[in-house]
Image (cartoon, rainbow, N blue to C red; front, side, top):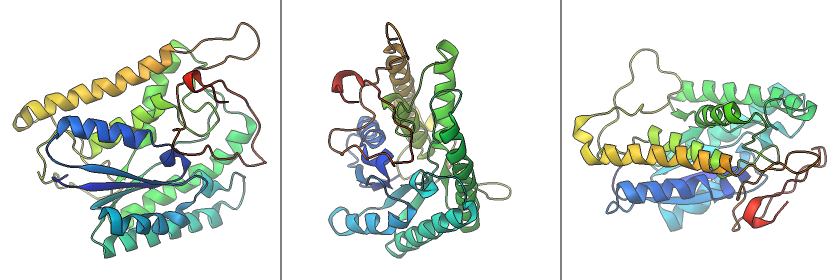
Length: 296
């Protein structure tokens, strides 16, 4: 990263929620208070990778981005099983259009893997079927990225590690109460991985280490404890502890109902500045109580 960078987060309703990008802005402001690095949200509920180019284009004139992250996949499954090859082709075609447009505007593209459909440790039949498609899309994205030497950030890897830690304490805990949208703890885990991949905590404008061996999908920069980073690295370690604390905080707010199904309290998996997307008719209906927001 460099002073004055403008990072546009392009995606579907997971991005439109305005949560993980809010964590990014807060941490970058803390690490580099004078650098003027800005995070811009260009998420829109219900969108597929085919919308990525238009969403990025909408930010070009007003925001002048230097980097763009793209996170799609959930809606590219079309919320149904079958037609995996056609869905994967449409998914990568949308990504190709977006990264080509980004390159034409001197915007560096970064791809994020999106999280899966889940209701805890044992997914139901609907989630299992749709994840069968989703599990074809993410490898297709990796192959696309490898061929074009575009970095891929493994956000769901961090998400699942944090979730596994929560499950060790209580196997009923969920990061996605409505089956797809992460709560704040899930967003915090993803934000921590994005920060690490961007090299947050290292001096700005420091070149990324050159990759060695065959270059495939990159987890960008595995942050090294370099002495030259000094207090910045120490601050980033604080940011890592912050994301871990967020996970533990939201996990601690689980409160079982007196009877019937477990009710989870997770403050906001959807930001108030983005309308909650409608679930497709084919998706099973569930109701969850969401902490202070009172929404369900």
